[in-house]
Structure formats: C-alpha cells, structure tokens
Length: 300
Image (cartoon, rainbow, N blue to C red; front, side, top):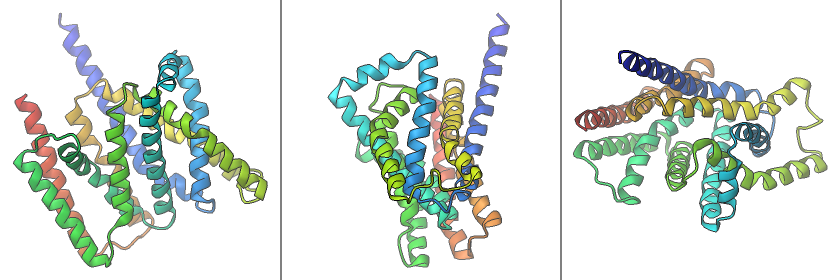
C-alpha cells in the first residue's frame, strides 16, 4: 500500500523533469535555426515536414498506431480538421523561423508569452467558456502591453501576434481531434507532405534548393530537422500523462523565457526600457492568469 504514493511521486518528478527539458529545448531552438539562416525559410519548413514525417512514421509504426491514422484518413471531417490545423502549424513554424533568422528573437518570445492569454480569449469567444474576473484583468493587462509596444514601435508586433494567433488556433483545432499528439502530428504532416516534397523538388530542379549545394554541416543540420521537431514533442507527451495540467502550464513559460535571454544576451537585440515596460504588463498578466489557474485547480 505504501509503494503506490511513492511510485506516483516518482512518476510526477519524472514528468516534471521531462516537461522542463521539453520547454528548455524549445527555448534553445533559435540556436539551431540561426545556423540555417542562409537557406530560404520556406524551404526549411518543407524539409521539416519531410524529415519529421520520416521519423514520425517510424515512431508510430513502432507503437502500432497506423490504424487510428488510417481511420482518420477515411473521414472527410477529420481530414478537413487536420488539414486546417496543419496549415496553422506550418504558418506558425514559417513565421517563427523567419522571425528568428531576421533578428526578431525577442518578438518571437513575446508571441509564445501571449499564447496562454490567446487561448483564454478563444475559449471565451469561440467555445463560449465563462471567464473569471481575474482572467479578464489579465487579458486587459496583456492588451495594454501590446498597445504600449505598438506606440513604441510605430507598428503592431505582428510576428508575436501571428505566432500567438496561429498557435492558439492550432490548439483549438487539436481539441477537436480524437487522435493523440503523435498520431495527430503524423496525420497533419502527412497531409502537407506532398506539397513539401513538390516544393523541394522544384527548388532542386531550379537550382535554388540547398540539397546538393551546401556543405556537409548544413546538410546534417537540415536532415536533423525531424529530430529537432520530434524529441521535444515526445518529452511533452511523456510529461502530459504524468503531471497536472497546471504544472505543465507553469513550466511552459520556460521556453519563451529562454528565447528572451538568447535574444538579449546572445544575439544582442535591442531591449529598451520602453520595451521592457511593455513586457512587464504582459508578465503581470501571465502572473495573474497563472495564479488564478492554480487557485481554481486547488479549489476543485
């Protein structure tokens, strides 16, 4: 009888460690994409689709998960849902890689700081969920932070807004899917793989593609895009089964925090006092949102 709580505690610790490692790796991803800055971002995303699919097919085959994917492929509604989620995910990847490789790492981190609040807004206006007063205050603070940034930059922080919007939309679509994370990502990648392969073939035919025209180091990095995609995902899936959702939500802020540190101290992007003030409003919003979420979980 005493071994069960100990086993659960061990599972929770392992899950928390996996989640922290997952988000830490996602935070470090700009270091990887920066090495490929000389390659067209659209080509990089096409490579990510193709090599991710190779790895995902191997993983789902080892787990015997092809049946679920095959059933989904025979359902028009499922195909439409996953095609839309795949398009949103691809747009998110493309804007993220372009932002990182054009010197906007700090703004990409802002996008992922905003994701939880975008999810709350989507829950209210799309799923008609009830929002608590503290959640409305958090949304107001985040909106004030974005407004301050617009006033400072003279333009909307569109990279951050597109990243937050596409990831929020992707999360919303994935909630409509009965497939697990691995099977769902496999189906999404499979649906867009013909376009990715066609684009890479065209790039190679016209002489503009990277394959066969870059050095061994860049070839190795390009072929590694599948691993870069799948490893954090597997860590996330492992963690999600072992720890509370509130704990997972707290740890998710590790990824944009690491990106922000990279943007300021590694890539020396400008981070003025005015920009810090804008971020402060958003961090305050996240602190309120997180505290309210934890309090609600404890009451339940």
